[in-house]
Image (cartoon, rainbow, N blue to C red):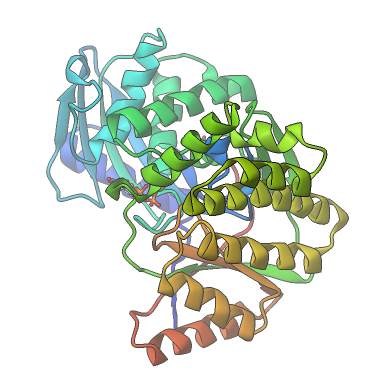
Length: 402
Ligand code: ADP
Ligand code: MG
């Protein structure tokens, strides 16, 4: 028997069956349809999205499933297999920033944002079931928003899901839902990954202008192991917002809208970094800015390495990214540092935390066929340190919300 917990992705059939059954048991009639959206891991480019930077996520095979039926009024009624069994309810007329509590805020927020953007969106009944681990830094929140965004788009006949431009509009609605209604100050990477990824490709996302490039993700000779550290992860507790505020304040001192623009105004990283550090006095701010500027540069280098199939270089950049997030951005925790260290010791050619940090998940690029051995070694390291056992996922680069 395996000595580690592997979290499998459901088949599309299993996900649809589960959520249809929950819908019917709760609302007493079949749903109009089932939609789903993936969680994600970011390969590199962390805490860069809200700085106008670059990131490189892939969509996971693990998805959030939503069954929906349209209502003629503006009531939203929801149930989640991951919830408390109660139906969560709100009238869209009562949705506004600060007015909504509970997990339904992510969903009602999407409908609210689409209405704010002028789209004709009514209420609905919805059921949710998900195999994206909850609060593990793998974007269960964005997958929830994206599953409903694509579902609402479909039942309201908006047609936004049909092309990348329309999907960018859905991304914007999801970001507004998360920032303004759910009250989590996250950037736009997670929602873009869930709605704009392509099956088999990594999503090279430029957060300054929202443009994307799809690059095949097929690390020949290697595979991706995801380690859910199960360390408590809470983005709403102010740490994420405080990092974001520090970056905004630094950009203001430097006279740019985003740190990305500061980086690109110089001839190279060294020049831009030295010039920024020369103008910023606070030591903490200097380290935060150093992370952002070096991370955007590393993401460019990693993208080039990916195009060249140079996974050795890619792995070294993952390692450097983790060190920067640990030492300069200070968003890792003991469990993330240990997961990364143990994976490397067990043969990973690169490992780093992924997502916002403060708990959550790490990723490791390991030689093909060694995921089980590396996972076993990581579990051993956690047990030896007296920490709760992590869980593991593997995934290829999967497809977007549909
Ligand atoms: P992450 O996105 O990394 O998983 P977040 O803290 O951003 O973690 O989002 C987790 C929150 O999203 C949960 O606390 C819950 O409110 C909501 N959520 C995500 N998936 C579901 C689900 N299947 N059912 C109900 N709520 C969910
Ligand atoms: Mg989230």
